[in-house]
Image 1 (cartoon, rainbow, N blue to C red):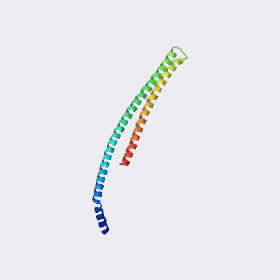
Image 2: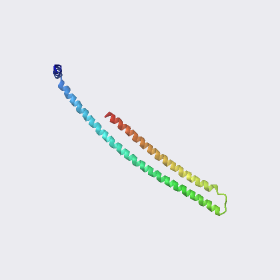
Image 3: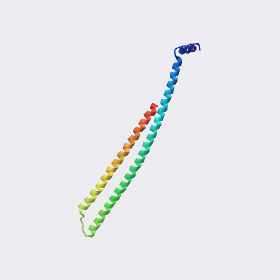
Image 4: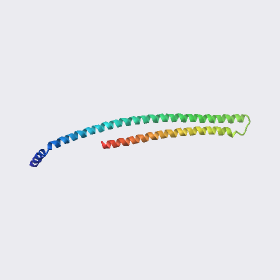
Length: 150
């Protein structure tokens, strides 16, 4: 106890009060910075939630558009098949045994064009979805780094 009293007297003699004040000021500044970090983190979390919601919305829109395109392509394929059957029946009724390859080639080319358009749409939708997922993953990593720093 005697040593502590002497150390306290020496600290007081050599500016111990100033050290106490600067420690208190330092604590206050650290608390202020911590509050600022929490506020920044809350803002980032809010932006992340907005991005996540937007990504989910865009994903649903792309999925709906893709489903509509698939339905349209399926309907077009059915229509082409029906046209081919009608053509074959008409030729058969007229007594034609060999069917013109040109008509089938035209139907096949149209179906291939529609398939290529659907593939391009699907690739674009997948690219958009992948980009959205990558952006979400990057944002999650960023948030984790900020949480570690705070």
